[in-house]
Image (tube, rainbow, N blue to C red; front, side):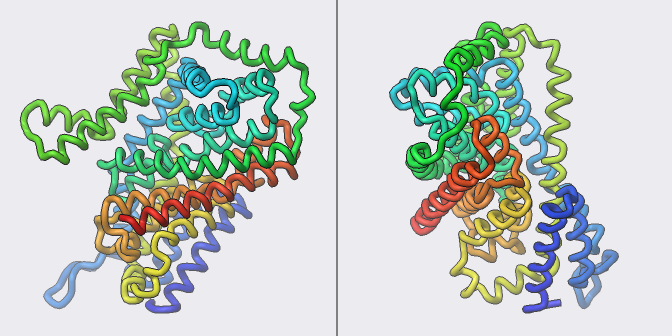
Length: 470
């Protein structure tokens, strides 16, 4: 199958996949794998491997393509996702996330509570899922609201936005890590982190102004809560952790991996060599750097007297990360099927028209997936699997002209921007924000849904500008 029929088949496949996930509640892993298999059969990929002959090269069958797409994802990024998730859980369980939040309050001050809570969310959600991060920081949001008399809705929207930005843009959150791996940037996570932080700035500025605006229009039940209940909630939360870790111990699990990866990137860029340089490059590999971060997290667990729970924490984390890994791998399978079906060749043959879409293509696909099925992580991993690696000549990334590490990193950012556009009723985070924020569902559309739309558009504008520069 070639040409327009191939494109129509691809579009129908994506629509069916979205309907299966969103309307019929089929698990994303089964939906993506099922569509991959059906698509492979329809477009005419051989059922079995065809060996090479004197007249033609070898052709991979469906089983080989599915196996290769699945295993390559695990080999490239699986361990990194697990380590990053473990670091996040340890920060949560030891109270380090609370300590980080307190440090931000001290730095920003209580006169700008919306900005303080937004930055808190942005930092905490780098290793912690945004849903969990909101629950962790919600008592602090309430306490700050009471102490500063700020709008409850403004504080809620600001916290949600801060958490969401790093959730979709910055590793070691599993979604961005998986996207980086699929894009061929598994060894360049620092580049992705840097662009994630950079793109977060205009995104959060837009969200901040919207939070201040909507806080004057919408009220929540928290505006009438008892004063003592708010303060006690925060104090009780701190008491649950006992003595909070010191500032360095709290930030080390995040900071040390970043420093190691940065140092490794510097010595590689300077083409340095020698035994110590080899050690630096070894420790600077994302897998090893996150392992160092994990060791600091285990130390936090030890000093908090909870080391005995490490085995259970690991088991719980693996149960949480498992579905993400499998969905990520399924996205890799779909990407490999798309590449083998001739879709890339068609795009390459129509490169002039396709190039007008360029960096907007991953944004549009991710936004469609996000709005349809709710999960940002699923939208990120599925879209990244479709695009493939900028290093692979038969990938969508190459067909779109995204052929350098910087452009690949911007494509990851575009995927993240799409994956936040928009959060509504089929997204668990929507309900976390509205319920904990004391808002009605209809108010959630004016606040959470609207701010994610503002953030996605602002982020994509910034990404497009950077793509013109680079």
